Length: 227
Image (cartoon, rainbow, N blue to C red; front, side):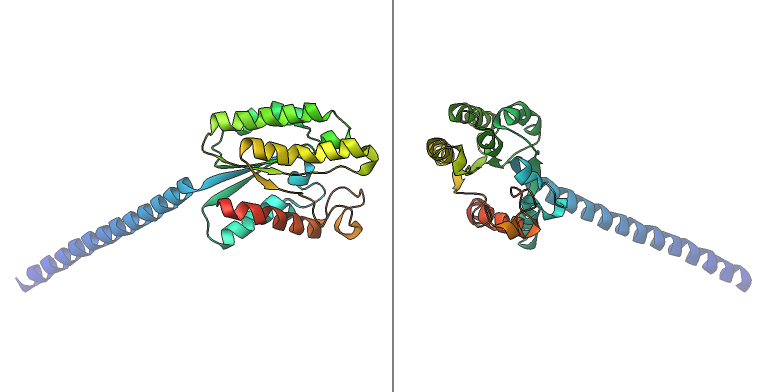
């Protein structure tokens, strides 16, 4: 009799232990599911910053982590701000090329749009009126798709060997477009870098990794107020 009773208690203990393990596993699964949901919600709440530009944005000759958009992302992450940086730079891109490419990049949500185009137009001596028209078209497309997106434009300059009038007209493209479209203006993306040999690669055009750190600061001064 005693043996049967002990056997019954043993079986009951196994049943309770099994139920406890299942309950513990269920609680663990719920905790993991909850954590996954929080991560998903956090990712969904992140806003996109699209940097759309030339090799200067792409980080020509640099490791992708050294390009100024990546440095901006590092700064944002260190401040725990909910933004994801998208590098839409392409080497050799002109304003006309950008006009043909922008719709593809606008397939993803854009909350802040940073336009860095025109430098290659200027180096090729393309008509200023044509560059203005192309840039305005890009701006209009972004506004049409994402009317609430905040807009930034990066100013550029060309060497004086293009002629004084051309250089002046080209420089004015960016503040004029910024004013017309109520965009934040980065006065000159290459400020403190352009023309400084030690901060540029051998071609004298593209910044070194140290140069891109300065570009990131030039951008951050304007961008931080929009975040």
